[in-house]
Amino acid sequence: MAAKKQLRDPEETKRRIMAAAKVEFAKSGLGGARVDVIAARAKSNKRMMYHYFGNKETLFRLVLEDVYADFREAEKALELDHEEPIVALRKLVSFNWDYFLENPEFITLVNSENLHKAKHIKSSKRMQEMSRNFVGRMQALLDRGAEANLFHKNLDAVQMQISVAAIAYHYLTNRYTGSIVFERDLMSAKALKDRLAFNIQTVLRIVCTPETLRKLETE
Image (cartoon, rainbow, N blue to C red; front, side, top):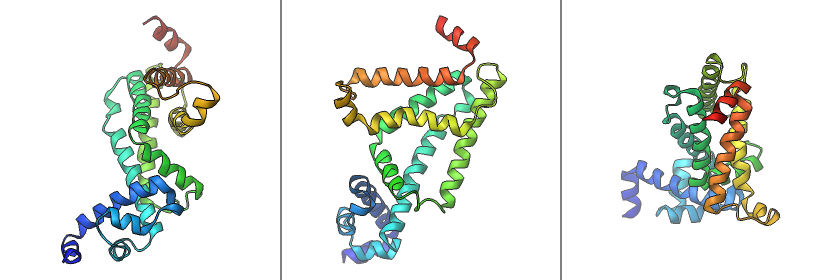
């Protein structure tokens, strides 16, 4: 009876399987994730999972696409094109930091895919489209700042986006070892607040002209 009910509502079954897979892949990676655990968490069965998704690797790719899509949509919702360039850049740096903190599964899933050399998303048209739009928004922000004589000219949107993500990503992926190495609780409220301020300052110093930085220092 339960199986028949699931078949009458395939979208709900797929949604539950995807949600369960996200948790299991984030916890155990692709190699360690177990199909029977995903099925049990989704209140479904392995047969249904294979019916809808084919195999574990396809399911992993779809989960990756979804977490990237959630990240891109959240960034898009900031509507940075309506903000003054420096305000927009500060918001973007803060957004990356807050998103990684609030969605730790995003980091672990990306780490897992990097272990596999991105083979699952390499041919994903959905990923390509999302990335082009994402880079385009960054380039538009940098160009607006340059036109207003606030930012250096000819800044590379890809390089800047890597830098914005990296200063947050590295800190959080290495928070456990870092806390030991530097003998400091990197996840205390004060440490997190200080790190965000440092991230914003670092990005502004990379992007802003000397004249802009001098004005900011007097504000």
